[in-house]
Amino acid sequence: MTYTLNDDSPLLKPFDSGVIHTPHRVFMAPLTRLRAESDGTPTDLQTEYYRQRAGAGLIITEATQSSASAGGAYMNTPGIHNDAQQAKWAEIAEAVHNEGGQIFVQTWHVGRVAHPDLPGGDPVAPSAIAADGKAHGPNGSVPLVTPRALETSEIPGIVDAFRTSARRAIDAGLDGVEIHGANGYLLHQFLGDDTNQRTDEYGGSPANRARIVIEIVKAVVDEIGADKVGIRLSPGHKANGMNESDTVPVHQELLRAIADIPLAYVHFLIEPTDPVLATLRPEITVPFLLNTGFAIESDFAQLEKLVADGTADAVIVGRWYISNPDLVERLKKGAELTEPNQATFYAPGAEGYTDYPSLETQNA
Picture 1: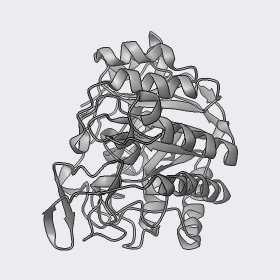
Picture 2: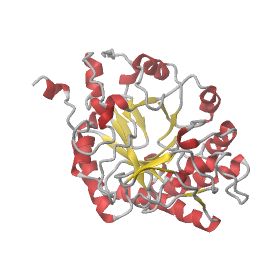
Picture 3: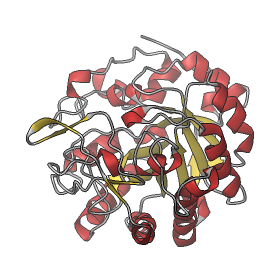
């Protein structure tokens, strides 16, 4: 496949928001790739992977554990909650900066998608409702278990873990943090009326279900500054068993509660034709980043139009960055795009990870 971005393309206009200053608007999506050590420490391979993709302008990293008990959904996902992990993230940040890029780490808690068979697996959730799905760990594929409903007294600790992991990110030299409130993980589980049946101040009304996310945003902003903070949301997305019936009201409550906070951005994973986007877009008062789909290849003509008409301020691209580390340079030149090898998305090692050539090395 080829596609050419002309010099006057809206995707090639500079982007400036908070600490983010990039020469274009085609940013790299957070992509779980399962290349960390089993204890969550990032590896030299990950350093090289992100270094190669510094031309993305802004890299949003793979989802990263905010605490030792925040993971357990997949093997070999990174964390940013201890000194060893922080030190390796510092190496990644330096490598990306040396190539002229910027990098935000995406922090998460997987909630009910965790499994006891996996390292750190402590399945907790707003309510004791299991997700329909399987975990893939050392004992093969096993059904997800019914999570333990969090006690009200435990919630401040989860909020604080997002705060302290954000502090570690900045101390490591990363440019900022994206709070993962999407894709059926813990924060999305609190937002959903199907997954949150609590009767305390964190359940019931849309405002109550949004409360923990609002508290996390404010805690992280207080710790590192609003200009270094983004948030990812996926209104109505059915990932990991989500089936919320009132996605608009709960996301309206959330967006209105943070409207006066000058975040670096709000990031949605949603199809552009989804009427939920048209309803929620006016609620967003900061730069808006749009990822148009999950497990699909981006349509660059559509992405140009979305920025040109103001639907989005920048776009988030995933799969094409996996197999084209210099994606924007290829688009500028109309060069052939390399198709990604899906068999290596979650496999260990360099194959399908750091062995995709840039145009420079390909033509050498």
